[in-house]
Length: 241
Ligand code: ZN
Image 1 (cartoon, helix red, strand yellow):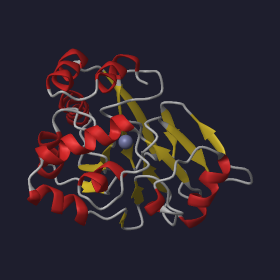
Image 2 (image 1 turned 30 degrees about the vertical axis):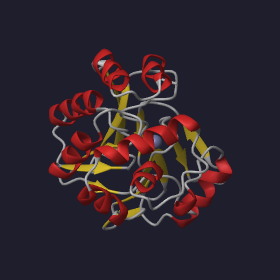
Image 3 (image 1 turned 90 degrees about the vertical axis):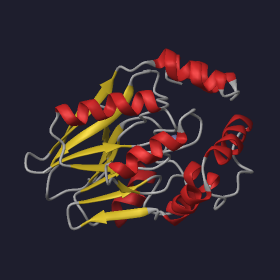
């Protein structure tokens, strides 16, 4: 089975379309979305509709819950708050109710787990940044692999005597061990590389490939500006920051 895993789309429809082209080309059988479908970008409704149309396995991100009114936005920075307010206006009650109903953790049989932030405290929306953070999630994980997002930086953490990490674009999945894979961000990469990020997992081959995908950044930027959203949310797309 081939899985196409994508996360942190953040309303960037141009980036989403480009990533879905890759999934099509790679012969993906099942779509898996790590949340933050909306927030920041100019096409929240279109992105959400696409995720649903693909019957994606889905978990909620902090922006999804914030827009649904389920999470306080006090700790969001000013630009993120503005984007939350704007996005709320763009989505019907039906979609906001749907976002509020999405779970924070999903498991596909004994094959894989999906979360937006951490498995240890998914409701806190903390970041996995250190080996110790990764250890806390790996300890709970009861499938060989867990996909996650949130930091917008692709990276893999491997279980071991000491947790190790890799930023390679090819990751080996060992059925006797456990790995956490951050799939990066479709719509707002933050690792200094502006290309959209996603990954493909082949569970028979035991391999994950991170893909970086070119897309029409100019159009995504123009739409954000036209929507009257903060300029920084547009410009950062050129720098991947
Ligand atoms: Zn995000």
